[in-house]
Image 1 (cartoon, rainbow, N blue to C red):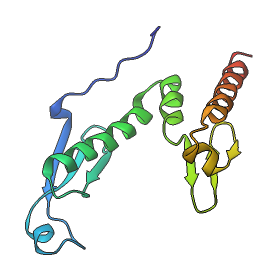
Image 2 (image 1 turned 180 degrees about the horizontal axis):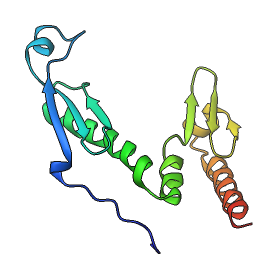
Image 3 (image 1 turned 30 degrees about the vertical axis):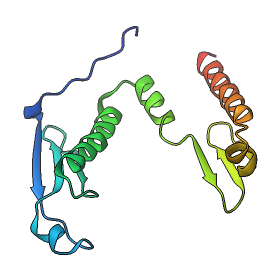
Image 4 (image 1 turned 120 degrees about the vertical axis):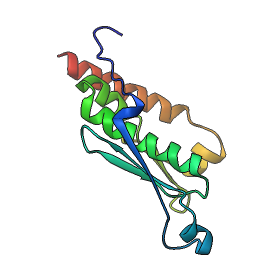
Length: 139
């Protein structure tokens, strides 16, 4: 790992709040405090989870979202770049019969890639794009 900086937090670094949701979901959503908002006290960054009826799922989603924000704020640039590269890999559009690889820019037929399982060309294009990016960084 080289001289990679370690990011660590403790439970007391966060404030967890539970609240009732609003909108669709009716009486259950409005009466139960299943929505979670987590705040990192030092930075003021916050994230929330409101999609599920279960507290544990909402808390897990909120922590995941907050972790992404904290990595982007506190991690060294190399970690941030790796983290960003994991965000969106490809867009799949069945209606337009198109698969678009974000890193390489390659566009292929949805039927070829998804239905027929011919993902090799997409993977190879991504490898070439990543290799080219590394070469540019080292120059």
